[in-house]
Length: 204
Image 1 (cartoon, rainbow, N blue to C red):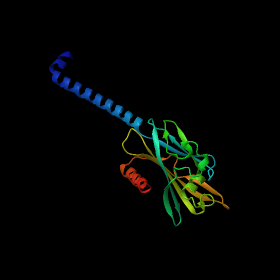
Image 2: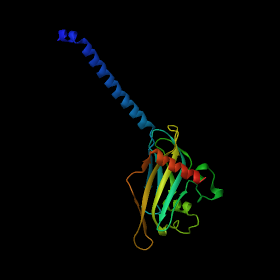
Image 3: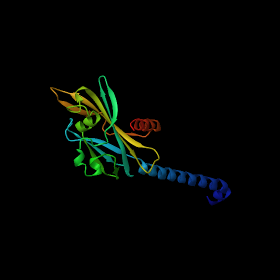
Image 4: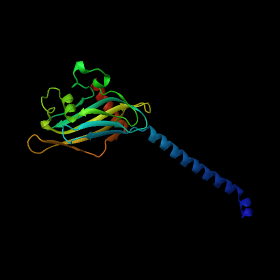
């Protein structure tokens, strides 16, 4: 055995070098993947309470990095109309009651594990349609999509998540909400993020 190793020392050294290199490559891949997971944003959008217009929308930061909520976009779809507006400003709070920044706007930092209540679904519709008199004028709506846009120190561009809700009607004036998916979809493709950035620029 030792004689064979001695006779083929060059081959053995080359094989050991290749195995060592493979081990380091695998280790580096695991290390880089772990760092990417730690820096990757994860924004949760949930409906709490009743599954109707009185339900409250919660935004949670499940990523390891803190985020800063830059804006919240609401896209409402009706039979003959579709619009996307910002609902980050708490327009329902009276001016004299605005004693702190969180009563003025939803633009705020969220640490890892933190969440913020952005309001009732009905309130979001009122912010999107301020001229509506009842239920944010949801009588003609068929679908609503909420997009949370944020920034983080881990990336030079925005991060975002989106979740849609179908609006179903049963009986007289009875409205229920049904989420399109179990979780909010994380928007990671550069093209989609650039499209959202252009929407924000248009809303300036």
